[in-house]
Amino acid sequence: MADEVTTKFTSSLQHILAELQRLDLLLRVQVWRLRQARDHEVNLSSFYIPEEEVDDILGSDVGTPLWAALPLPPEMLKDVQAQLVFQTAVIAQQKAATTIPLRLDQLAAKFQLTQLDLDILLIALAPEIDLRYARLYSYLQDNVTHRLPTVNLCLSLLFPYIEDRLAAHSRLTSAAPLRQHGLLHLVHDPANPHPSWLDDGLTLDNRIVRYLLDGDEPDGRLSDYVEIKTPTIDMDSLLLPPDFAPRLTSLARQHANLVFYFEGVYGVGKQTTANAICRELERSLLVVNGEHLLKQAKDEQFAQIVNLIDREARLQETAVFWEKFDLLLTKENAARQHLVLTMLAQRPGLTILSGSGTWESASFAGQAPFVRVAFPVPDYDERAQLWQTMLGEETADAAVLANKFRFSPGQIHDSVETARNLARWRNPEHPQVETADLYAAGRLHSNRKLAELARKITPHYRWEDIVLPDDRIDQLREICDRIRHRGQVLKKWGFQEKLAMGKGTNALFAGPPGTGKTMAADI
Image (tube, rainbow, N blue to C red; front, top):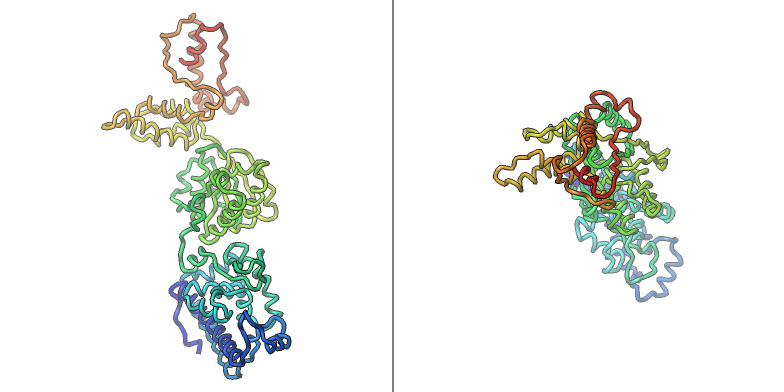
């Protein structure tokens, strides 16, 4: 009869409703048994236990409710078994014909769920689909306040024998997939402060309910710490060292659970590169604001957020990019670091950690491949190219800017935007960027942390303002020339490869107060 069914599922909800028809058969059997128990005057009240019930309890099998032990009539048993076999065959045939991904099956694959896990999950999901299941659960548990299925009811619906029910306990422990990943929660009865574990209610996490019903909105508890981005950048458009792009892409394709550590200063393209890798892999990127999470989340909340990050990344099949991960690498954050590294070692997808300091980890040994990637600051020619590209038609000496400011691509981008804002404020009608705007913007974006150690001055003296012997003036001009032509000498003339040290410019101005040392530095 099942061979005649050719209909395929057109949505995940349709599949779930078909699975719930199997649950309806199990519930129908237990409702019949409960009615028989009531007809035989078995007391189900929680306020009075008669002697007859005590005798029945002592005479029944361990772990089996009185109503659940009642045998089914042969005809009913045969009919129920036939319907279960038929319904299971129909679902299997419809799934085979279905061409769209079914969320229930996807959930099982993402979290390694067994068929028993799925049956438990369906029993807990049913009241979220139709409230009549909540009333049925209350009826079977003889308590109108127990609208959630308890552990005891769930296992009694699935298994007729105590041995099977006890063996199934392992699927509901805190280390089992359903609870480890927060898919299912156990709810205690507030009226009973010390309940039996069997009396705990089962409820699905709200995010899992939405996921099963084709919802992709991230968990609301992550909104302050996480952003999911759709990659828009091609690897070919990045300014990376030779062979970087093919090596990164090759590693990401070879290893399903690879962990990268991208090392480099702000703006060298760590997140941009992660974006491009995800575009190659056709995956979204889940970006974690590591600094904000570390500052705002308390220890218990931090642990919860880390688990939710892992779960959301699995649900949406995204790579994870953790900004400023190196903030965790302190003694004060050792416990949090261990928590995050443990989660990452067990993650099935690509993880990219980001930081400015050097870090090598042995935490992933034997669990996940770990690769540290150091992102260099662009050299003189690359900086000049970046300035020219980002300025476009706006006139400026890109070579001079590249020599004056040893910026990363991100800093160059920020400086150009700041220069345009300065030009917009100076002349709202015709905001043309001038060299002075770019110099001012560059100074604003360079050495921001020096303010903690020194006082920054705004130069305003000129050569005609200082009075010094001619040879001293010549020395000062030579210092300026050295800085101005540094890029050409080191990069174009090749001295950068020949010099191990001494590539910067250091000058010592000596003399009594008032002789012009500060003025010379200003000029």
